[in-house]
Length: 169
Image (cartoon, rainbow, N blue to C red; front, side, top):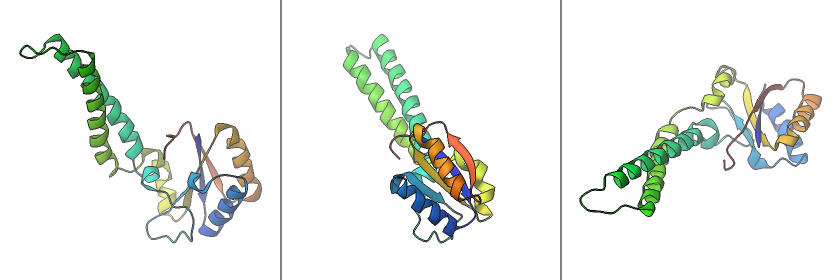
């Protein structure tokens, strides 16, 4: 999946684009609109916490660092077993999984309060009143969707795509 970014001047343009995307078989759950606080989105699909916060990238980083830390602690415990205990592969696996879970949990708690770094380049435009539309589509549909929007809405600024997005948001 790829995330395409569009900057739009107002909600009626965004509504027209959403309608066209739905007719092009882009699911509602793959369209996200972000606006400054207090903007009436008139029934548009609002961006959720997973889109506008740093939750998912922080979760990924925390799980990776936690798993590495848990594995390292398990290896140290295997090399230097405490007071006559025998630590084997199962304990190493358990410590790795526990570290990944703990790291993901702790970093998600921090990431939920941080703004999404990928959206920093749009901050000025959004605060000026423009709407940011994010559309998640398979790689082979990126050009099709961009040309659809370009063909019918010259006022929409196509701001490019992200190379990858998480599968589950």
